[in-house]
Image 1: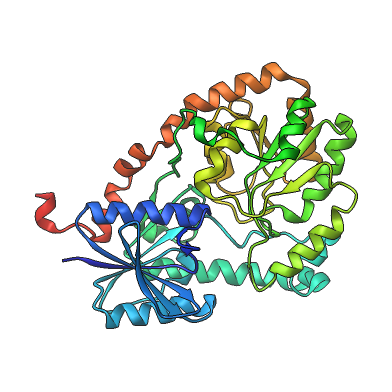
Image 2: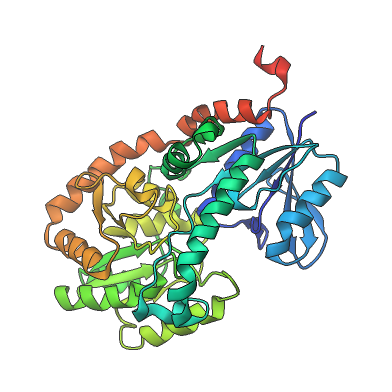
Length: 400
């Protein structure tokens, strides 16, 4: 039997699959591998070495730091007799002489610019202007090396393929591009419609627009400039918008507390314009999407085929997104939403345009519902079949 080790720095949190797009993508990939007849075990960092089952998936905790899981997880997978190893992030894929190595690419991740105004959000603050250009070159080089370690790579957007076509042409057949998917039902579930948040409910009674930001908060997810954006939009709409952030301050290079401190300092005078829900479970997102008027993806850098952007369109909401990474693949500018330059002014202009034009909001939302059908989970399962075949996840006799 084919035995696949899935290695991730985050997967099961508080007994359930973490609501991030990378974790949701990996969950469906695992389910597909199981449907193909493979045995699967997930290796993730934790405070213990417990083994347990979640939703029919075997989980193996490894007591280690998140940065160490890639090496320790692969070592344990080898000891456990896994024939295949799949890394949830391409740039951590380790070569193996005895196992088939595959990986997921969630988008270019080294495209982080330096903007002095937000220097507090960077490691070493203003020194980032010096080390970032060097780090970007090194990170791209590392990713190109990791591609050589893999037999097959599944990419959620076309960015990596374009780079490989240019820089590493002989390896382009290893890249399988399959757009992301939405696994939330398009139909309204009355049980999840009540978002049970007094500030949101009051804002709707006051006819304020609800701008949903289905993001965890970090530099790359737009946390740095979100407060400035809220101020700018508030001044242009007389405070008639409420921004609702569903995520939390994420652990990234040990900077969770730094992000939270910087963000709270920035939003001192806009508490009535922005609320942070602090980690909404994915299964409870339906009500928030339905209650919103606009879905905002304020990405700063490192973006793939955003699951949140697809979900926003699925629920008939116009999506405002920056023109970063895979967002150009999933938001059709002027049709399902507005793709703007990656700046506060660009996003503010797009939001105010939709704020003023209810008819355009409705038209884009309706277009999004139609367009999002191409991102159905059923379509995705069919499209990844060539990847699972190339990855060797399917027994030969099952394809004959």
